[in-house]
Image (cartoon, rainbow, N blue to C red; front, side):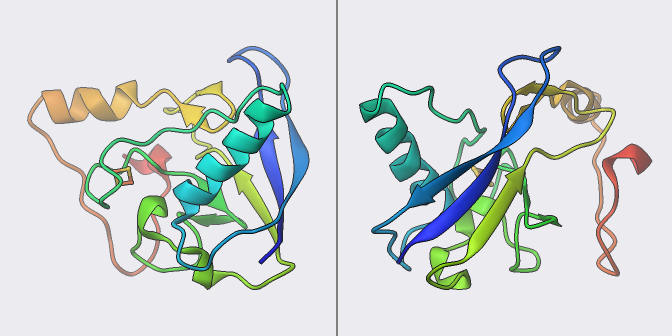
Length: 143
Ligand code: FES
């Protein structure tokens, strides 16, 4: 299938950012959202363009580092599912998908979709934890 991606591009923390549009063909419904991004980044690299920076670690839905906003929803349309476990079958051929970083004052943007998670890491290092109210998403500013 083919999708059109509007992706937040910001070269550095203090630089201005904007949405840039990319058309991507040949996307499999079985790909994870991050695998689709890998495919886009391979295409951008082959075209001599800067790949999109995004965070990921486990790609198993455990670490939470792949957080991003997809069409205005944290992690995308599948409730309680990390972006790395979101699959492209959640979208239809021809869909337009807007991808932005997780925007919250404690998590400043570092580059593109990468944010500084230092404030969250400090809570973990102090032995604390953050629970999620299943009644609705919490804004990171509440943490
Ligand atoms: S990369 Fe670890 S939860 Fe997505």
